[in-house]
Amino acid sequence: MVYNFIKIGKVLFLTILLLMEIGCNSISAKTAQGKLVVNNIPVKVETNVKRETPKGICPVNPSNGKIHEIAENGVTTKNTPDAINERTQKTLLKEKEYGYRNADKYLTKYRDNNLVRQIILVEQSTTEICAGKLFLLIKNEKGEWQEHLQCKAFLGKNGINKTREGDAKTPTGDFGMLMAFGAKDDPGSLIPYTKLTETMYLCGDREFYNQFIDVSKVNHICSGNSEHLIRYIPQYNYALFFDFNKENVYGKGSAIFLHCAGKNPFTLGCVSVSEDNMIKILKAVDINSRICIYAAK
Ligand SMILES: [Zn+2]
Image (cartoon, rainbow, N blue to C red; front, side, top):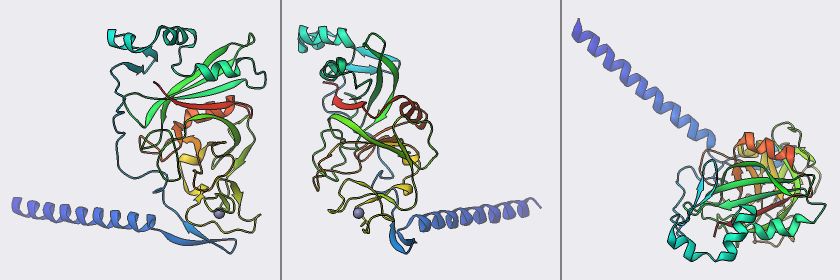
């Protein structure tokens, strides 16, 4: 009797293992590339491979985190003797003025610009190359910058300072806003919001390079170099398209967004934050806001 129970148990165990194996196979079959036709236009079904590779960790930032550290609950700067020697007194004063390292030039630049009411700072961590902090600052009645939001942000797998398409780096610099979009309903975005449909792409082809297009309205078929936006879920549940490579120089880089984080702790060139924070940002920034991306030192 006991022997029979063991035998039945073994058979059940092996059956479960077999079913698990079949389940895994069917998932990978679904995610394989295939063809789909939308409004009689052949469309290449893309997996999330371009946006995020399935495995990986954020590499250590070679600039080293010994001097500066970003604390979880606030901006803190380690003032070890070496660190103080390394930074000039002038830099220390500037840090005291605003509290955002290396963001002074942006905060000063837009302080007296009445059009710019919000600024998103994305500061790369010194300990990880593809992570950092996002700060959302809003001008108060006195015209002073006030922090509205601070959250974790993920950056390109290979860090920042983007130079070309496919380098998996996030661009560095000061950018304006183009549009908001997403697969989900408009959460109350201040920037005009486009809800994604099956025919919307961020084109990677020469003809409409780095442009958001609806292929049902233009005479063009997007190649596999383009992003079929609605396929990137949850990343494009909500997204902000900012004006990196606004001249649309072919090969310089395309489809760079602030969007919702996927399962990996990095992007392939965008900036990502949690979906909750993405909603907060969309509700707070208008079309004249800026996004500034920079290294912490
Ligand atoms: Zn295209």
